[in-house]
Length: 138
Image (cartoon, rainbow, N blue to C red; front, top):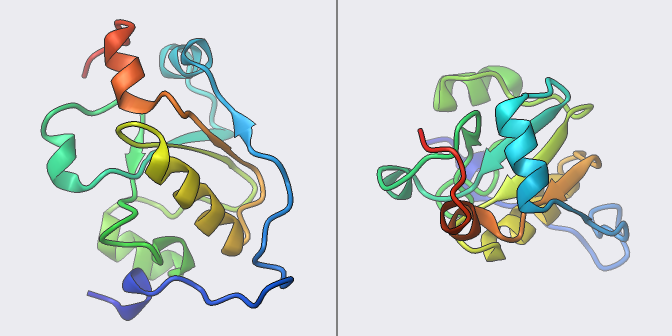
């Protein structure tokens, strides 16, 4: 596996890597709308591990696991394609992060910002809320 996948960027205090912008928070209704009517400018990013996807996968979402590949968004487009078998999201797209319960989603969002993805959001309810509220199943 490529070293960049395992290494998060190192940022000094006060550097460009430190994000000061507030997160855009998505609610269940927002995510349901995006699943039912995908918007090519918004990408749902599931940061759970591949083994967790065997239990449930949110429709239309891509998977970029935070724990096993924290440096994924730092890969070149070709390297990313080779590893994940889909195109690396462009920095002008909005990435909306979610996980099982919301904790990893926030960490993934901050990490994405360190790689130049400034248009980001978090679905803090994540998969647990999605399933509890009867979200679409894949």
